[in-house]
Image 1 (cartoon, rainbow, N blue to C red):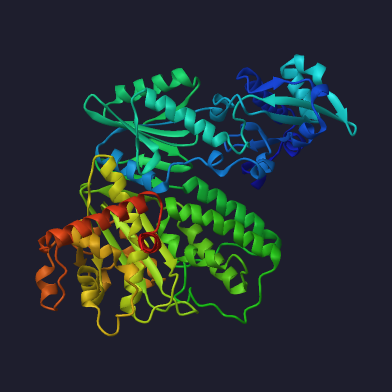
Image 2: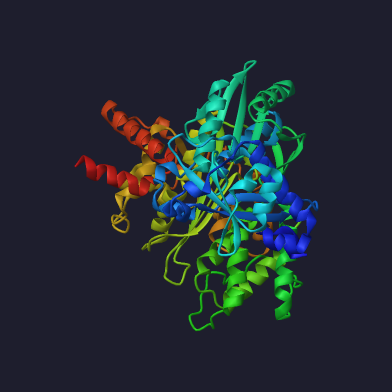
Length: 612
């Protein structure tokens, strides 16, 4: 059963599925011929070097879940890495953060949303006139190509007893290293022609004002998500794009599937996001892989991990290589799952992902426990929603010296009221001397994500104010006052970790004290147990509103001032003109660095060095 959902070579596919697979490959080669992707070449005019440099045709078969057989003919572009410049080989794709923000806006504005796919997208992009690339087709696939277009029969030759057909590549064939960028360039040209403008913080998101309302399109290669308040507008935009790329596969309605994610809009400001089908398939595949070892996923665990999750025992026996491969494969799948549909599994997956290089038997038990829990909760779906789009709640918490090398663990979440749109759980990159320093480093590590949301949402028409919740009052003083609040125990904290103080002074961010027992980010910094795990998980998954834990918008300034902690809105802080100019310049520089995918903790230091 497992092979039905895996991609395989066309040769193996033909052995397994017979004429069904042959028909799928015939359909694929016919598409290449109809779109003039390949052209004839005189094989006798090619030099030996040209033949050696010809890209090998890779033919693949995939049996889909609906029982349909899909063929794919592409080129092996690995040899191109040695001579194709990097700037001609990399193409942007829609970031997960941008997609989550788009979905949130769609739900909040109750936009009509459509998903559409451009079949054979790359094949619409023609190769530049100065590019000469050759594809080498071998064996039974030569017969299929000749059956599609009999003109190629005259160009067939034999090499080492096998049929060979050399053809010229005229369009961006899948597998070629420059194909993605050629398609991206073509698609953005089409969107610009139709009046769309790119979001400067994600080059795979474009907007256009139609009938006074914003129309947004985001794309991940050939998969697109389109939205606008008015249904006729969405229909007309799809029709316009279809004029350029005929045969769009369109999906409409409240329940959609995009990039493997099951999306459902369930009322104003809310949507559900699940991966139930993918998780069920993953569990089925793992249980099949465990059969030879006499193991299963039938145990019942109340939590994904025990409280000793971060403990590593050096004396534990290494995992056998066969099991280690299973471990690595499914941890990679879980990383994809946790970021999209199951943030409640992130702390466990994040730790296990640090063990893939040399997993031991203890890691295997932790992995199996997680998968037993995932199986038990496989139908759970997260809910994301917004009370409004002008207040963004950020909670960051760090656990001090919890790893074997005495490093801390950072946990962070971003929310607009219901559920979360982003989360982080990761081991810190440096050792710290105190819990306050650990918290400060954690804030610096996670804060670029919320800053990106702030910038991206601003370009989409919303400018959210960031409300940062922290449970460590000593760190709140350091955040608000910078080095001025450092005591003898914290004077050593590197100045690079104070970049967020500039944002507070500029009024870009407010700091609020949150009691430890209500700190949702605590879920991401350690393996919680019992009632706290259940409560935090329900809020994290959007089944309960964040106000169930903590009214983030209520004023806590009076209580904090009594403790000598000035956690107040920075806009009330009086700065001189020179100080304001300095802070504004620093914040603008941070925005540019984060908008370009950089890290202000390190990149700001490099900028200062260059100035000196």
